[in-house]
Image 1 (cartoon, rainbow, N blue to C red):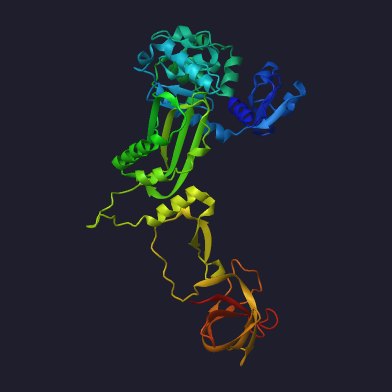
Image 2: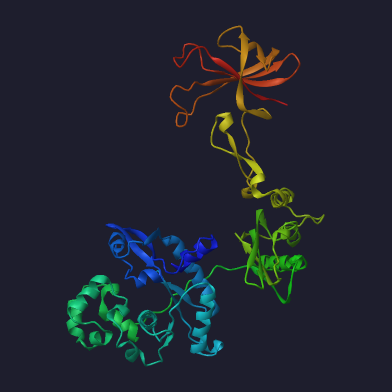
Length: 495
């Protein structure tokens, strides 16, 4: 909910605090509440309820659809961001993080100081957090959701800290909770006092998420539950921390590019994107992004791409931190130098594309892309030059004109025999007499693309009386059953 509220504030559409707002997802019987604002919770609206039922409680309820996948990605990024406090972090469900701070809390001045710093930093991000420290994953989960604010459970005090919490603090499923409530087991201490044999018989076939005994053992530390932290992607970053705020980052760019390229060289990588971030003293952040055609770690080339880009940055009252990140990193081996000092691979064209794209924009620079089609006008298309691939050039078995018209232009033709080449044709009000010809080359329709009834083509290479060479084709044949007389078109010109 807070992520959605921040997005609305950035769009200039902030909602009043007293307006009840919920985020909904599709359920088996209509939309259900996924998240609720503080005003909605005070009105008695909870998650999991149907939207149609909650409208009866709050007629002015505003309903928006939740971005569940976006929330997941944001939580995963927050999980990596939280590694500033410890090296092992994982995502816990849809709204939580687990941090293994063993041996890390003393670096922040102890557990109370560490929790205070976490709460302060998360509040700067616009996030409300309930924090807890405990010897086990299950105990920390229960205390964070059902305990006091910033709860700290000492070693050996798990049973005392959890005894008054509801059984929902053991991460149990809905049917299991309902069954325990019917049995009168509402707190964790009440569950722990029941003979294990009786509970084991009741839940002998239950798996871990629905087995209260296994969950209780995990919370108490009798069953291990280690934090299996995933490795964060390696980040290539160069930064400049300034003692005093400045207005222009231009003088720091050469050293940032050199530092970043040194890191890329040691890792055997090259980057396809650059992200320059400038942190202002008033809390604002300005960014400049560049896309590169071919993986590069040439500091001089990368520095030149920022020419004219930094003028868009509003310095405000100045900035004291500049970072340069490498994105879309790819493997890039060391190039063997020739005796004359040049590299074996010619990078002049990719670097030219980079400079043009940085000057005129990525969408302004395009390149022809070969397509899998034998119809001439479908044989290639235009794609972004920044996505160019270093492949071997295609070899055409047939000679094609150096200039191909975007759309074939219809011409008037005189011929000696119906199935033969033209003797004369008129194109753009000029008459051309045929001196030599070659053909025909027949190209059939593509039945998987063309409409039924599309006629075949017979192409001729024509040379007129002036020595100019054209590429003509006849569309259709006499009495082919797909229309009237054949039509003639001019499709291209040879050099």
